[in-house]
Length: 344
Image 1 (tube, rainbow, N blue to C red):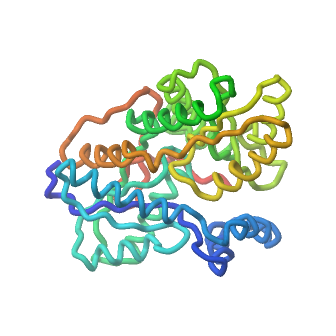
Image 2: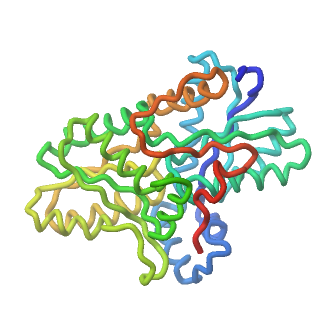
Image 3: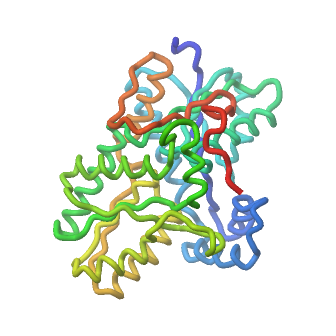
């Protein structure tokens, strides 16, 4: 594919409030159509208000965009980078409308999720399709980039953060990888395309194994966090808070928590890990060190530039595993029929 056929990159992310007055409207956007009771929204709103009503995710993404622009320039890829979100400003609909107004005809989309599954992959295809529909006939063609959970630069960035955290905590601390939990039914739905499919939990497990190996960690745990919904619905377990009790009962002096499931800091990292999990560890008398998310590592932006080069220069895709991965789609179409359907 010639580089002349691609004239922009869109960074597509989740979004987050940037002031107290934005918290409740943001949460209503996130949960629209899911029947989440108002009381639950009020509870989660307090988590945001604990940090002044500001999620760090938008600023993290703006910083990442600057790094991506430098990485693209270093790679000789002259592409403007646009920014759009699923749930809050700048919304993806506005970003695509701006792209259309700027004369962009064909662009790549980097979604800030490494994974398969509905919310981590297919829903981004839906976001793309919705934004193109809103922009009308002038909407650019949009091509979503692939999953990157086993890209060597992603693994190296996470491994570097893990090594730094272990030096701070002491190498006797137990290494615990964590990622956002999902319902078991949703995880199974991501495996329908082929044997094993693009199953989220399988991809997270592969990433944890690769990062641990790159950081020289022989033994570790993989747990989950931030589950929500009715208690009778089974989700991926164990939960990080329950696992801290288990680690303490084994006599471990502390933990290094690696949020491998998250590209950048946002509420699920700052509240669920830095606040709640840290408090639980302190109550148990355990050392708690949280590794940095990889989005601030220069290698992460270099990875994005390499994903772009795969498309515009036919650069071979670099992967560290054989775990099924996909994620690429055009104009909001899913990567395969029946892949990562939403489970209600």
